[in-house]
Structure formats: structure tokens, C-alpha cells
Image 1 (cartoon, rainbow, N blue to C red):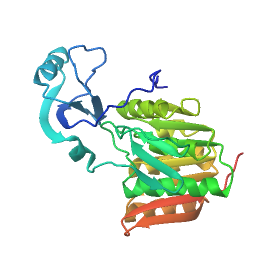
Image 2 (image 1 turned 120 degrees about the vertical axis):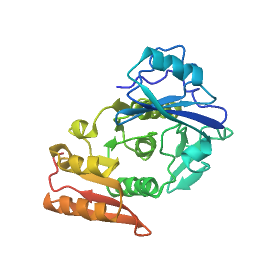
Image 3 (image 1 turned 90 degrees about the horizontal axis):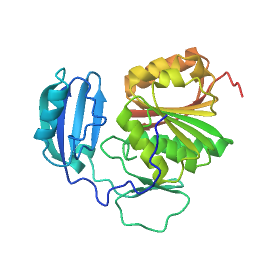
Amino acid sequence: MINSPKTTDTAPALPYKELFIYYLHGLADTGGLEALAGLIGNWHEGDCSFLFFPCPAEDQVRCLLERQPDLTLLDKYHMSYEQWLGERFGPFETGRLRISPAWEPPARRQDRDIVLDPGVVFGTGTHPTTRRCLEAIEWVVGQEEIGTAIDCGTGSGLLALAAAKLGCRRVLAIDLNPLCAQTAARNVMANGLGGSIAVVQGRAEELVRCRADLLVANIHFDVMQTLVATEGFAQKPWFVLSGLMTSQYRCICDQLAARGAAIVKNWDCDGVWFTICGKNAKDTR
């Protein structure tokens, strides 16, 4: 389990204005390296690493390469923080929830408010698949009491936070990427939900066996295919699946039908992105 910070004062006063990104072949181990001053995050993708800094860091990266000769610098990039996010992240409302960037001026918070610092991972809630997931979670909790939930591929932790804010007493947030898990853990603590949400770094396919009333997965298609085929998935009364394009949506629908699951409601955005809400035939509660 990720150890969350003990204080909630973790969000920057302002977002990072600039990002200097170093693309490395190999999995960089940045733990405990004092020479990497200013490191924002270390993103692992396959057998590569992306190191994020708020200013040029040639000396820090050179030191890392000397310490880990198996690493190779492939490229480096310089862009604004908003270019990396792909948007200007501002407050927005969806259903009963209001999501605000952590760097916005403090306002009078209400129970429905979620304060979010996405850091350099993805998950501000503005992508159509995430928006539809937020709508789907709220729709499900309006149908019956949902006491427990699992968020697979949690990213910034937004969907897990939403589930907790909408009434789930216990939420398990899972992400294979360590940087995502760390970011989600910070957001959980910043929203005062450390007692309701546990963040775990690991494979959703392996952790899905944990009991829950609702499973939410906004993840890569290949991971979703594996996830849906597990016995753990079949034991979840409710599920929300998203991040699907047209052909992927059809494939998952066929896979669900073959397992006896029922699609109760679905959403599509311009016929491009699809979100599925459904129930499994096997209810083990």
C-alpha cells in the first residue's frame, strides 16, 4: 500500500509553469538520490522512464546515468504544464460533484467538492471517458446502496474520490504505475479521505478478486479484456467500464454477453468514446 503523506499541505500554490522531461530507456531508480534535486516525478512506461523537472536538469540526469549505466537518454522535451495536461484545468461541476484544481484560491468547501492536483499524471476529469465515469458512478449509487468500490487504473485518484464523496464507505484505488499511485495517495489525503480510500500500487487483474459492490475501470483496452475475463470481475454486482473506442466497445460487449453480464446503461461521445454500466449475473453478496 502507498504510504500517504501525513499532512494535507502537498499541493503547489500554482501549477508548474514549465516542464523539462527526460526520456530514458530503462527503468530509472530515483529513490533516495539527493542529486536529483527538483524531481517532480518518475513515470515508468513499459521498459522506459520519463523524468519530470520544473527547470533544466542536465546535471541531475547525467548523475543518474553514471549511477545506473544500464539507462540511456533517448530524448528530452520542454513544454508548458498546460501543454502536458493538454488543457487548462479549471473548476467544473458534474452532477452533485464539483472538481477544483488544488492551486485555485481557497474557497468555502462543501461536502461535494473534490480538490485535485493531477501532478504530471492524467486524470483531471475533463476527458469524455472520465466525465462519463463520474456520471455513471453517480447513476449507480442512485439505484441502490453501494458500500464498497474498486477503481482500477486510478491515475490521479479522481474516480475513487468521487465514489467516496458519493457515499461509498470503502474504496480501493489501484494503479500499476508507481507515480500514479503516489499522486492518488496525495489527493486522497488532501481531501481528508484517508479513512475511506486505500491506494495500492499493483496489477488490477490480480487485485480485482477483492470484494466490492462496484468495479470502475477506465483503462487500456488490453488490460480491460483480461480484467473482464477474471472470476473476480464476475463477482462484482455492478461495473462501469470506460476508455473504449467503437471496435473495442463492441468487443467488450460481446465478452460481457458471453459471461452472462447485462449492460444496463451506456454513454457515447460523438460515437467515438464509449462507457458501459452493467450488472453481473453472479451476485455473491
